[in-house]
Length: 476
Length: 104
Image (tube, rainbow over all chains, first blue to last red; front, side, top):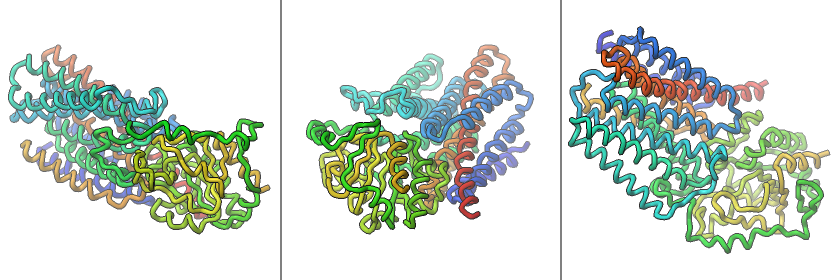
């Protein structure tokens, strides 16, 4: 295959990938967009085999086959609830691949004669570093989401100093490579230093992030894995890697920005770990408020109900209903029951809407995916800005396992980490049913004053499934 | 290829990538993220080249290293690509299925 033809095909495939992504941004064409992207990658593999004349390298097929088996098993077996950790895990694996390509390129394994050794070496080191930060960051994120690790942010003494030190080494290695790149001793030194420093950096950076920032972290790592691919592409002189990696890196970063904006945080703060770990906020003050009013508790079952008025009446007479799902719905796997509840309301003549906070759940669009699994029409799902003014005119709001995103404290409690984050105006509705597991603060660790509000707030504590069944029963 | 060209390509595609998803509804954020995640497995092409080219070298040490590290890279990248696109497809199918139902 001639070089010119190869480059033309690379450009065409990159355009196809762009088209695929842009098709994926519309619901109707999303499936086609995904297939186009997948097909482009397949074509890219075939073109690479052709151009580099590698069809007879039989080991490639074995490795690819193993990868297909693992990937397909993961894709088919995993439950929707485990989606966030799977995305994080796959992301990390992609980072590992980019890092290994960097290692091989640095060692000169499988690379042709390179006209620009300094450029190749520097990009190799960068690919190793970005790839490994992605890998270890993603592994920690996946571990936290899968509850193999504590979901609470872990802060070491001098955490920032450690991160800065590691960053210094990471950058230092790159600069070193820029000037000294011609003997094997320095190559191995560079290799070891970059591997150790970036692995530790990825771990240290992600371990400090709490659950509330996990969606942003995953999105950021997603972007990083694209960048790692692009840099690896520069190292091995592969046009398609560079262009597709660039597309993924930039669009991932954009998605990250959307989420940062929703949480009123700057990306810099999250990178520096200044977010969910606000050690200065007085923890003691908050815990005082979290006392279950015991005289009101009827603890006859697992479910604790605090009954104030005839809730059945309120529910049956509601004409407008907004349902606010959160991570608790995902944990309890309650999305199907939520759908049943919505249907009951509609049979009763009420208008039902779902209000989706941009950072509800543990990844962007988490709630949308779960509700789609339960066949809730997406026309009924409303983003925060579209629905926030309607809470004041709404009869009943049902909150399912959401906490921080409905916490009115975000508007005025200045010393808390969620201060300034736009929240759903749940507190303006006439009647609020909160189906949360307990009265503990959410991930941000800020108490919700709604729990203390007597008027119009109904707390249904315990497993969301049982609480919702309870509500459904009240229609009969 | 000239390093300068590669860097320019990276910058241009980054700008394109930035603008192309500007109007995505939040409904699609998760599938989009996992789709792009799958795309980042494009590094598979680099891994394949490393494995293939190292298989044909004469030095046995280099060949072994290329096969082991490159092999892991190919497996990892393929897992990323296949798993990513597969999961994205599954998610998107759910939106699709629901659409048909709401029409009927």
